[in-house]
Length: 82
Image (cartoon, rainbow, N blue to C red):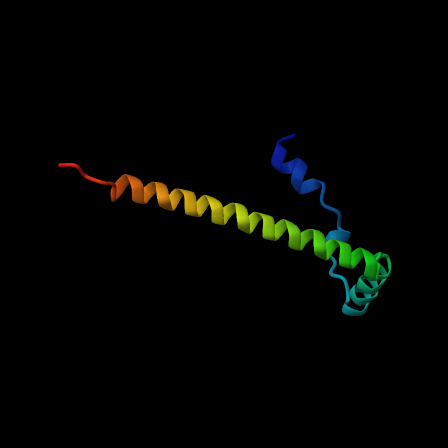
């Protein structure tokens, strides 16, 4: 049996059937009931961690930008003794 027949033959006949809108809505609501939402304390902690990380990364990128900028100016606009 070739690969294409194996892939084509493994499809269920149910997979061709579409889910109705009310069934879809019920399934979405059921899945959302399973979601565990963070407490306010966890939310504040996560927010602070993300903000510290973002500020740290901004500082790193700014420092690299400043360093490479000074390097480029030193190379291309350096003192020419000619």
